[in-house]
Amino acid sequence: MAKTWKKDSGSIFITLGASNHTDKEREQDDYYATDPVAIDKLLTVETPSLCVWEPAVGGGHLAERLKFLGHTVYASDIVDRGYMCELGDFLTATSTPFEDGKGDIITNPPYKIATEFVLKALDLLSVGSKCYMFLKLTFLEGKARYNKLFKNYPPKHIYAFSERVLCAKNADFDGMRASGGSAVAFAWFVWEKGYHGKTSVSWI
Image 1 (tube, rainbow, N blue to C red):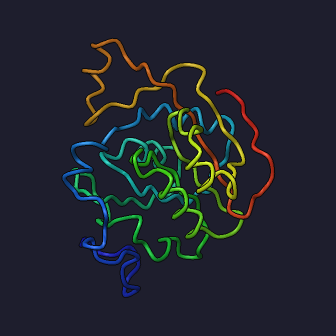
Image 2 (cartoon, rainbow, N blue to C red):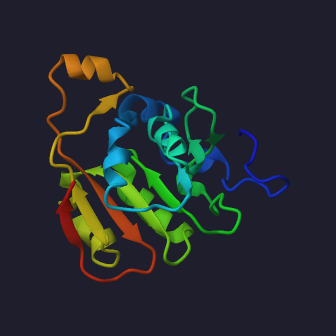
């Protein structure tokens, strides 16, 4: 594993061998980089913590935009994609990298395990902290997902994009634009640790 964030604190991750999804599977199926404009749109309606963890950082597209806008970003991923980050499986993390325990999580999780990402984020975060997940609108569908996640942990807000945001396989944004852009609708799903009220939906 790569060096830890906090000197002599030990890693927040347990061994990668405990993962139920391999590096090959992630590389082949789950690396879809997000256009940084998604961060700009999010910040028109939300004010994330100045300390942010991006646990599926990929090539750093969201992380770099957050840094540019003044956030301290802790970056990690299970696969080394050339971006300086901590290597480890988010689903096996035992704590957050935040020095005082307070901060938010912002990421585009691998879709096939997005439910598990949300549940892990809510388990790790402090009460009142938020996780911001960039997800397909179709994430709202499904009885199993409702029973496992939404029934007990409703998002506080859902912000649907009024225009399509690119989410490019293997970060090939130019190729995606050349082929006509995106046909998939996305939204920011926002959970707040400890929130159990109704979900509001709006557009950005």
